[in-house]
Each structure stands twice: as structure tokens, then as C-alpha cells.
Image 1: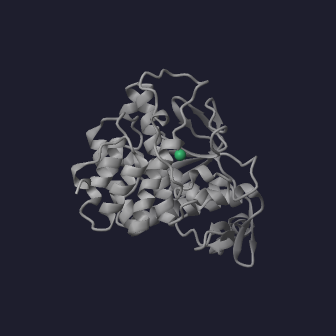
Image 2: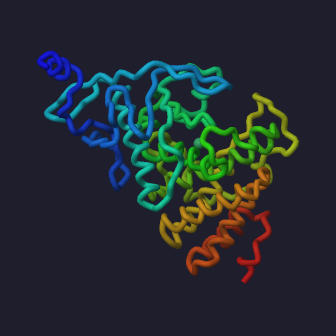
Image 3: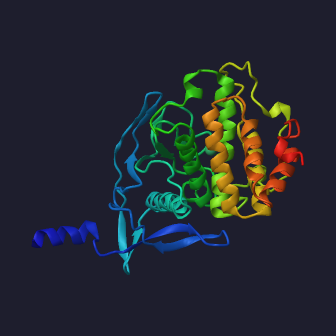
Amino acid sequence: MVLFWFLAGCSGHPLVDQVLVLDRDEDGSYGLVPRELSTLEDRQRLVGPEGHGYRGGLLDAGGYREGGSLDIAWVDEGGVGVSVDEDGLILWSFYGQLAGAWQDLEDRGYQGPERGVAIAYNPVSVMDFQAAENAAYATSMHTFLLFPDMLQHGVPLAANAGVVRHEFGHAWFHALVVGDPHASPAWIDDGVVAEANAVAALNEGFADTTATLLLDDPAFIEASLDMPSRDVRGDWAAAPEDYPDPDAELNLLDMYDPYVLGTVFASMAWDVREATDPDTALDLAVRSLTTWGEEADWLNIDRYAVIYAELAASDPLAGPAACASLAARFPHVEEPPSCAR
Ligand SMILES: [Zn+2]
């Protein structure tokens, strides 16, 4: 008994209720604040119902092979757990945002993606994830990938409330369209590059829709990166050259950029939010995506925007806003009958 308490006192800190994390306040600025992280059962290893942390591990086409346990070193500072290095701070902050994203959905009556993701911290990868993003969701592995930040000075991406909700939005997209979180999506199995690229654009758009509307922040990424091209208040409109080439073959030197069109989809939802409120705009997005997924016409991502306008028609404020947005942002798309009134 004495030995147990001695060990617990050394490494377990069982009496600390809160840990120090980087979090966002209502006006969008970030600071170090104590938070409960009430669902995080094992702070040292980052394990709770939402996810299970791993250090390293291997990521390849076959999936994620788990690495060892995380070992977050921390000290008790006046009843608050404080990690002794940046890695621990980022991991706790990420977990807090991830749990917060599920809570956001629960508060709005959505089920959301299945809980219990793998959280891979700095995995070894044969794929070049690091070049693109340093927080990512690996589709069909149900795994969040975190890489230590190297090139930025703002809020680390993995601690950015919007970036985490964006990645969470990818998991939600997968849940709404595919269902089984571990199943490979049909548009990947089809092997048609243009289909995969088109869906990737809508997937990025839905991820940004999730982040901007859950936080009611049209430029969440600004705290980390100077990227005005992702601000959903811009007057972005889809141009024919933004769509993937239907005859495209896999060519690593000529990668398709899904964010350009993705931002247009997210901006349409934001237009409706301006006329209504974030929850109305988000609910339309969720229902539109569900319907679009049921239709399974993968290359036709414009159809999502049309469905959005059709579903919005029953709301006296959302309807006109969605029709105006569809006309302005997707000028080549034929307006649905519900808009021609
Ligand atoms: Zn993304």
C-alpha cells in the first residue's frame, strides 16, 4: 500500500483535475488555459473513449501499424498538470479539441463519426503526408495523423480548434457517405482518378463547412497560417478549370488541388449562414451530403450544391440565400426549379 502511493505520487498525479492546454476563446484568440479533459482517462498515454494515442508507428497503403504508447511527461503546478515539453502540450490540446468536436455534434443532435480513433503522433510514412498538412485524417484507417510542427510560428495546427474540426469533418464525411469507418470508399475502389479527385474537393469543402460553422469562424486557419484563399467570405466561384480532368490518370507531378473547389462549397454554406445561423447552414450541409452520398454519382459534385439549394427552399431565409449563392458561385450549373420562382 505504501509502495503504491509512493509510485502514484511520483508518476501518476492522481489528484490533478485539470491540465494546461492551448485553447481558443470566443473571439478566436488562443491562450494557455487549464481544462478538465474529463473524458481523457490516461493523460500520460493519451487514451480515452474518443481516441488512443500512439507514438510513431508505420503508415502505408495497408493501413496504420500502431507504434508504442505515448509517454507524456508532466508536473503538478498548483493542482494543474503541465506538460514539460511542446509535444505533450500539443497532444493534450488536440485531444481536447477532438473531444470538443464530438461534443459539438452531440449538442446539435448528430451522431457523428464512430468514436475511438487511433491518434498517430509522428508516424513513419511511405506517403508524403507531411508535405501537405501536419494534421490529417486518414480515410478508412479511422486514424488521425499528427506531425510535430516545423515551419510555422502561429498556433500549432494540431491545437487549432478549426483545423481539428476540419479533420474531424473528414471523418464525419466518411461516416455520412460510406458508413463503416474502416471501409474503403467506393470512389477509391473504382480506381477512377477523376472520381477520387472530385470527391476530394467536396470532402475538403464539407470539412471546412464543419469547421467554420461549428466555430462560427469563417477564417479559422488564420491563427496558424496566413491563407486568405481559405477564407469562406471570399467571392470564390467555381470555374471549369477547377474541376478534375475526367480522363486524368495518376500523375504525381500534376496533382489536382481539391481546396480551390472545396472553398467554394464551404463558402456557399457560409452565405446561407449569413442569412440564417450556423446550425441551419450546417444542417443543410449534413442533409445534402447524405442525399448526395445515396445518389452515388461520384463525379457530379455540383449536385451537392443543387441539393443544398433544393433543401433550403423550405426555409424562407435560407432558400433565397442558397439560390443566390448557387447562381453566383456555380455559374455553369443549371438552377433547380425551386430557385426559379
Ligand atoms: Zn482536409
